Length: 289
Image 1 (tube, one colour):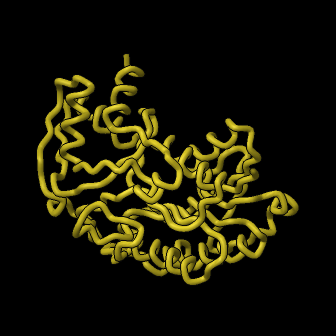
Image 2 (cartoon, rainbow, N blue to C red):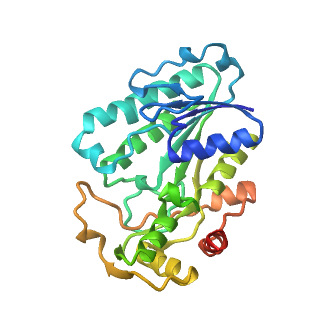
């Protein structure tokens, strides 16, 4: 299986590249601003697959991680971000499908409005923030266009490496430094271990399970509850957790309150098992020791 990863210099893209290279798969990767050895510069505003030359003929899947992901910028700079996240991505998808390459579009739980919980793939998508509307735009493009594709809706991702500055390690680090953390009690989501996400996407591609899937752990937790869990399981005695509401933060755009997702369709198709937060924290504790 030969794979092309757009946005291979970002957090998820880098993890996917490492995952597939560890299996000795043929991997091509791109970057936009974060230049890295072995990656090809690619600008979604001027998407042109011809730069890959004959390598395209051997490529089976194109994973699209590239996007402008700064949430508030998608509202304040709608036109420029739309050009990347929607116009450029749609052009890329068209070229991939024309070349016989299956696009794997990385979408988000932010396509949901957050007024309920445990969203399934068939629930209404009514995003309340601009970033979610742009992601929904590409989902609609794929669903309307037809052909072969995978839409993978992801929630919040974390790793166990402190240098990645993701969810678990950031909370733990700040608490160990004695800092006060204000964490929302009313923002609920489904956090997932990034290595699991890589394996899950790999499985979809290997088995050619096409269509739309919520790819997440299936757990639902608030940021405050997560902070309490991190502190307890890692035995941290310093720092302070302060419960608050998401409305107390000065975001430039709306944030949905509950984007927890059901992974039932994916689990039934694959039998995959995601790591729980408890298991990840146990592993993190072991690494720290």
